[in-house]
Length: 499
Ligand code: UDP
Image (cartoon, rainbow, N blue to C red; front, side):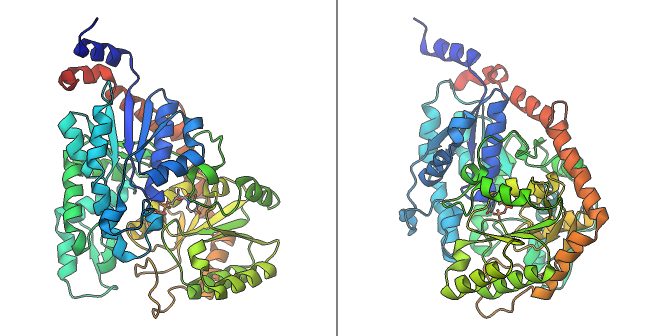
């Protein structure tokens, strides 16, 4: 019989390269990581996705593991230790702002079960890919000698702004400046002019209470072996190059991850708890509409609207006269008043408008030929999904990286039209004025759908380039091949001291 080390080496020599993915449990982070895992699996690697039990169950219920040949691994998670309800395991279960910090702190306690999972694996995995926010994976990876890449959700344009802002002390300067939301500051070191205001400085975890978490994430970033980004070179080449230079590590642009063959219904495989409509029902409705005639309206998985703002959107869509698919969250329909109002709107716009209550199969909608415009909050996933399907956008950013994504879409790529908001908002305060009125919505939707041929042409050109990037010989396709080759056991054998 072989000695354990020899046994491990023999297993390593024949094993597939094994990637362990550790997403942040929030839809905007989990969805691209699932797509990345399925890409890795489709290219012959072994892919495991490590997450909390609620997310693991949702993914299994959606059948993701069966179809994708990827392993879903549950890690014990105790949100109750931080005063959170037991099912607070995904950002969509966060009830209010006071739960955000405890949620992140609870996630840091995943380190011991994660380490135990890795230690039990023979051979050790080739590479960990962990979300930027999961800085707790850094210590585990280094103690086991496993290479670690971080996955960062936004565009390279945003990440370069963030690094430049951090390098030049922009956050501190803007925080100290006694100006309001209208005063703008230039982000240093950018190849194009980028201006931000106080509420819109780049970076995550920049509020004072999160200082330590941000420092941990920045340190984990510096200790990593590189970054994986859901973008493609042709979309933002100069920013990819700038980001790589500023980071001083490889930037693996492997996207758009979601441009792969889809067999499953994406309401199930990409969704939350309750699909608002089945993919086949929405596709059947869209099949009846003319090409590029429908506007899709959705604000991602986090932003929440009060009835007052909801009403303005509804009246605006009604007034625009365009066919629409509008996604309204269950949480936005909590009041009976909102429900009654929505039913009346649905009756008035029957046939022309489709309201999805709850989770929508967004990818199926955006990839349908009838959809010709998207009113979006500019979450990077949504924006990329739109551009990759050649759909121009009305930009209505709410918070975080979304204002910079808007600048990229409108000023750099020329695929977007601003609705005109300047102040960040996640959930509107009860007494705050409504940021966008019905006339503004109707006007922006009409301009997007009737005018702006140049925007549509550019979006379609980027869509073609996105598909090209993911085909054999395309840049993202080839980069994924290189990434897998870089982290196979062949190169790892050198570091086998850990086995
Ligand atoms: N999404 C979806 N259906 C919905 C809402 C969102 O499929 O009803 C998906 C959307 O396609 C995207 C992700 O959820 O992949 C949202 O990520 P994004 O970065 O756009 O915004 P966030 O939710 O992080 O604000």
